Length: 134
Image (cartoon, rainbow, N blue to C red; front, side, top):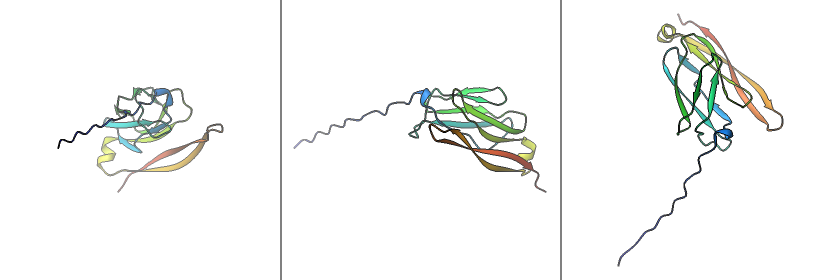
């Protein structure tokens, strides 16, 4: 007896960059170090080709996996990121390398901002303050 198996797979359609809605960035990063962000569509699928604008003027575009690798700015403090063409932004704290090594702590205070009444999207943002550990 011979058994033959036939499997038919349906490839998941890659979401369009215009469908980018959710931006995931690290809460903290160290200045000059590599960091990764991700962009998702409304269904939670990683979204390639989405362009992200940072408050310091830098831009990155997500790769085929919906992620982007970038280098954290050298200037410490709050850094804001947004999906180009979409309202809202998210914040991350950039720590100086010397403070990160010394165990500095960053306090992130959660805030909520209504982005659009029509689409009911909420952004969870953070305000960063830095304290040195003694």
